[in-house]
Image (cartoon, rainbow, N blue to C red; front, side):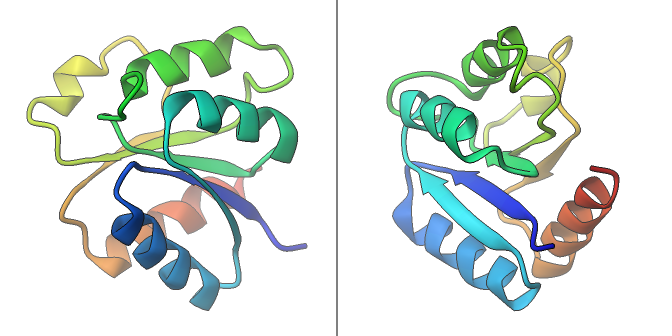
Length: 121
């Protein structure tokens, strides 16, 4: 069964690049460009994984994670932050994420991290 990945980033070029990379790895993708939209799509699409930028136009990645974790139906969806935000590890202490990929990322890091996280769910 094909795993579905929700890609959340306000930079459409980054979303497009990640979609292309993941398509080559046989994942299906859904995209969102705001925090609100990402929460709605997570609820409706039930992705196997969320790749989430930290800096979104309407909320932070931390706020998105907190909203998703409050919802019993979405609580177990793995989330990886993908961001160039300085000090991201400190900003994300205490929130339930499965990893961080720093921008700029290389394709191998992205694909191996996605494969590792999606293999367990």
